[in-house]
Length: 83
Image 1 (cartoon, rainbow, N blue to C red):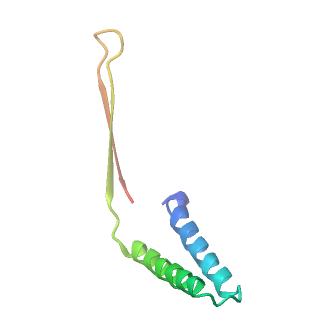
Image 2: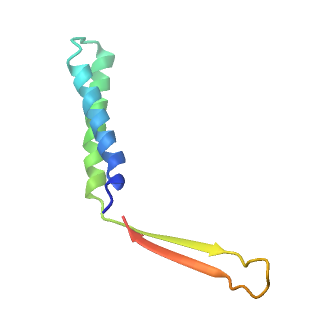
Image 3: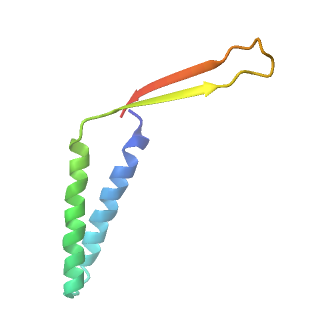
């Protein structure tokens, strides 16, 4: 499978982890910062739920119109993928 399919989820997990790390190590015990830390940790836990989801099929249908001359065939391309 191409690596770019996993990059957005990996980057999301990385930024959530880094945000939680920065808040935890900031030394501030403001109630809003505690809430932000709990929210980031909860969101990070939810990204693992995305990994547990089963793959789904993608179908792309591309129709190319006829060329200027009437004798040219109309082409239809169907691409099926699993993500």
